[in-house]
Length: 133
Ligand SMILES: [Zn+2]
Ligand SMILES: [Zn+2]
Image 1: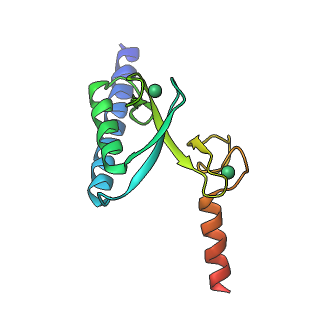
Image 2: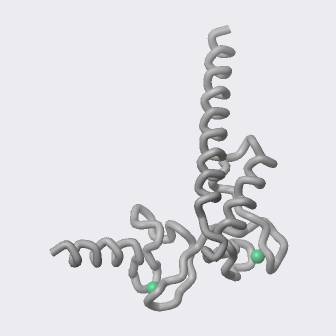
């Protein structure tokens, strides 16, 4: 009986987390301008392309609604090039032009380039620091 209660509590917690994530996604999406784009990269065919950030978030939340049992943030979207579910958020390095997946360098900034180690987030941070001096 105790185990059953534990299981119930865990399921309830997970449900709350999923609902919060989905809500947050919706709110974020409504604030994003239509012109905002993001790079995505397919882990199946290794091709990358640019798509509307709004569209990406919309598809991501639709995907997680369709698969309530999996973690919503980790679901790859359907690739426009090969039609398989392999699309993950990516960045284009502003320095060397490499297109790489988010968190390509473990335990580092999500937009750290695995090729030249440039990070737009860090560059911005340093620019802000310099401006404050
Ligand atoms: Zn693909
Ligand atoms: Zn780079």
